[in-house]
Image (tube, rainbow, N blue to C red; front, side, top):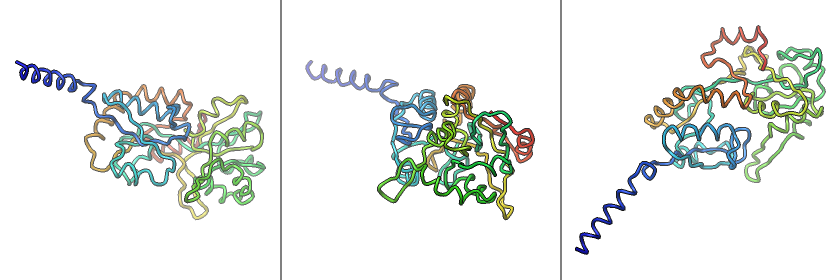
Length: 289
């Protein structure tokens, strides 16, 4: 009788442990621990919210694997199986398999709303007169400022915008909030940023700011195109096709909620199916948010 009771108890405990909540594997998401407006450890980023939405739809609790340096986390964390997915990567990033794009956006000009001021393209007179232009290195802004002859006179100012430097490998970080605040305070006449980076801070600024999407017809001095519009996806490790299919299903099913989340953030949204012709049409209209 005692043996029978032990067997029954063991069976009951096994049954309790096999419930849907206990069986759900966590969705491990690689994310920046302090990279707002995207993500942070307090869950305040819009990519935190998107990760939670995906995890909830899949019935898998989200477990974050944090990184500090964006240069190596795909190699050191995603590729090694420490995490399953990365939110907010370029569509068709060759280092991983990417979902269908869930939004498309562009680089923007940010400037104070003042009568008669309009900065629609890189040939704007305002750019020629601006004393200080806030931007991040290794972006389309750097390339285009070199083309229009405004890069080297901004070099010293650029160094003053550094918000963080890692002790190892001299990784330097520029805080998008600081760049927007430079414009808001009048310390800079203009900022050039990736729209989703700037949107939250433009929206919450105490002084009215204009955020205008830069048309996607830009080219370097040698004629080579400098893309300003990009599509964004969720990335998974190569070979994880089942997970990728699940994520694509969620992105399609919850498309309206995702779009509402991005709009609430203030992200300037462009047509995901944007083509070269569509980009030129946007340029003609001088699209702004």
